[in-house]
Amino acid sequence: MIPIPEEAFKNGVLDPLKDDRLIVDLERLCERAGIAPRWFWTPAVGFLNQNLISYLRRCITIGEEGIYGICFTGKDHTTDIMSSMAGALMRCFVDGRLMSSQTIADLVLDGEQPEATVLFVPNFFAAEEFGRFDTRKISALGDMLTYRVARGLQTVIHVDDMAKFKTKFGGRTVSIIEKSMIPMTAAGEEKSVGDS
Image 1 (cartoon, rainbow, N blue to C red):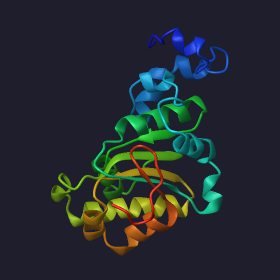
Image 2: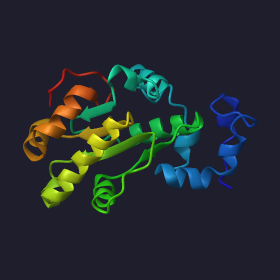
Image 3: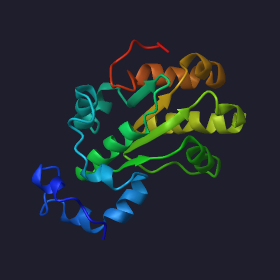
């Protein structure tokens, strides 16, 4: 069993009674979620800004408003932010899962879809690395977004260069992002739709 710092119980992030099922199975759950165990007991409040906390509180019902995720843009990396979000959801018994774009593309090309109520993709589009993706993999990532939006599932992605992304992915995927995702900076500040 993974040792959990006593501070996590003292500061109220974890409750030994309410969270006992999660604590017992923490290693397997963190592996499934794609996060380091520390994100399970690290408080989201204080690490994430209020916009992101608000999204987490509403992510299960926000699809009713036509919102199916967040699109982070800019060069700042978002892996820790997304890991914190996934850990917070895990504590609330919500299936949040962090996966790489390569893993997702491979899954979709094999006829599968990533299983998660909220899917986090910190490298959905990294302009410098994306040259090695062929058109089938680009199409697979677009298909994954279409699949998830059609089923009302939340997806949180990071696009480091929106102008280059639009060139690579084309209209259908860009339209899904612009119409159904909240645009934000890595700091969690909302942006205007279409800003780079």
